[in-house]
Amino acid sequence: MAGKVRDNKDRFSTATRLRLFGEQTAERVYRSQTKRQARRSRLTGRAALLVLVVCTLVVALAYPMRQYVSQRAEIAEQRQKQAEHRDNVERLRDEKARWQDDAYAEQRIRDRLHYVLPGETGFTVIDPAAGDDHRGDEGAADRPWYANVLDGVDKADRADTPDDD
Image 1 (spheres, rainbow, N blue to C red):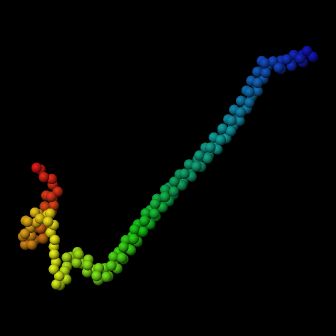
Image 2 (cartoon, one colour):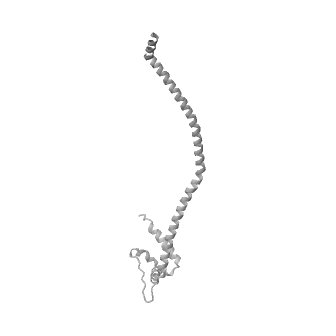
């Protein structure tokens, strides 16, 4: 009986409890490390296979997806051009219909070509602010048309250059 009491005392002593606690903790840590290593080795193989499959899918689908996206962009661009062309055709149809009207055609011809009807008098208005530029043009009707054009270009060029006063 004395041995039993002594065992109970040893069992409840702090040193004994700490030693047992340490042994139990060491066993748990060893078991968890073993499980973790086993799990890690399994996951590593599975993860490698998963990564390989995902990479294969990405490589296999990259080119078709790029083609799909570029074709969708091209289709959208072509639809936009088609809408612009439809608008242009509609505008040209409207203009053609206006030109079918004799009054519109006559008015546009008179504006563009400075035509006058028989019995009417045509006038050309000269800008008074540009009066000095036209003094040298008194013989312009006697010269060839290209000489008048070249003179006009020269005058325009001189008008754009700043004075060096």
